[in-house]
Amino acid sequence: MRPIQEASGDYLKTIADRKNGGHIFRSYQFIGLEVAKLLADEPHKALYIKLAKQFGTEKMMTLAKSVAEINNIRNKGAYFMKLLYSNEHSHDKK
Image (cartoon, rainbow, N blue to C red; front, side, top):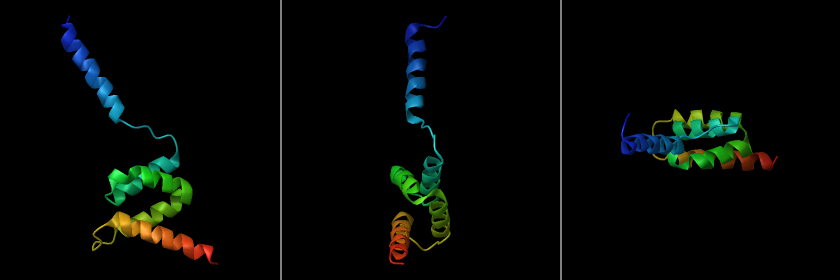
């Protein structure tokens, strides 16, 4: 049998690992995380999840893939946001 200090250390590590893992329950959550990865902007993943819920998953993925393919953009996240909102406002005028 292992000493209690060693066993409790393993348990605390397991709890800490669970805390860092996330759960995805909806498709827009998955798409938001994928968009963040495509744009290399993972610190703002919560924003992309919110936008995927607001704008729809198909629109978000299509736009993110096209932005990700452009090599000479320094900040792909900012460029994506500019295109997302400029496209949204152009549809409002029609």
